[in-house]
Image (cartoon, rainbow, N blue to C red; front, side):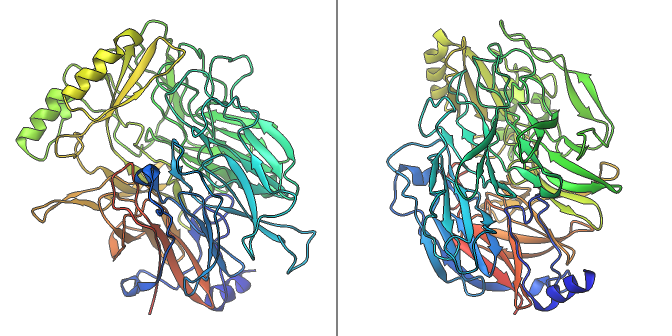
Length: 612
């Protein structure tokens, strides 16, 4: 086996067959043609333009090209923010086919993104038969579609499944699919993305398994208890991990609705904010681990769980927006590193009963977790004073301080810690690699009869805020990602870090600022906001882009965190890179199309790098 692998690495093709490279989401490739010694020689090999941002519409301004391509059977497959699926020649970047599901661009959608596609091989069909291999993906208008990997034509039998059925649909455009489905045996298993902050009883976050050939529903799993009627969501909007040999899937779930007030959803809300292990063939719950009890902060489990090995034990690594990470026994869900329940600040809002405790690791965290007016930062004395004044008088009792009438400092905020970019696992060293953000948020609850006056006052003060009506509750929500007038965060830099953790101990091996924010005077602030994730290779390299303020792909030394190389991109890359080899030549590919909501440079490029 080792000799065969070595021969493939030297002279053959090595694929990237799933969104996270494998079903377990490791984002690790054994390829080692590109090494720490020669990575500086990487050059662009080809560039492809998807054309996805045309024709222009109001949706274009919020599109995010978050896809990671897959490589299988000599073809590269990817999806655009509007769910066009494209097949490319991996050596030249030439288009082989394009499928367009005809998303209605005149309609509003909560998210305009697709992180990728999945693939399934039909064992009953012969090579060359239509749809012997299928490319399967979900859409932002909540369809599940299968097309022929060879031609891009819609497959018979499976066709297109309407996922809005059976979930209590309230608002079209707020129930979507943004992540690729898990494939286990002959099953396609998918979650959903549900718009936040709208109402108490939003759509249910049901996870469903369909037969990959026929499209028949095989099982469904609702993370919320049936008794919880006036709530919804707890959905798996991120990517589900799978262990086909054990017939298991690992589902990352989000908050029950609405995110910031739980008076209508008392208790710990079933399997919300958890990683839930299910029997892949039946949907039976095997175990669950909840990272946040009774979420009031939008602390979804946003990352794909990573299947790792901990001191010889099959395990699951779970990263979070909070900066906590957990290493769980894959068979039982028991924590393999020491954790404890600690008392946390309690809510002062009438009708709210926050959880008295939350789970805390007794080892390193991936982000700072305390921020107050005394910690305010600014690039100038004036900006620091502005930030401090903005923070004074807000509730700040540490991590898990609940939302309040006066405003609560949430740090890390909902765009903090590790988000959908997930982690990468380096198996020979036992390292977990993450890009972790640091961004503070102010959250206020507003009695419904005062909402109009509060919005008017916020507009007059030129605060950059969003409002969640939270219909069906006594309170609306106002949220502000705290930035100074210059647009820079009010918390101290770096605003993101690349971190390597030794999973055996739970301790950091190293951490370095990820990228920078260029300044007009030629200087730079270390660590730009990162949306995207890392991959790691057998060449001892970590590849990551992610930063919204730059247009670069970087390579780091896995042992030290030292930056070894960077390559220019035509737009920001809020995505995760991947790698493969064809004919013994290794390529590194990334989608560089920016992120409309984050304000990064937009585009429609897929870029490949290789050695000369």
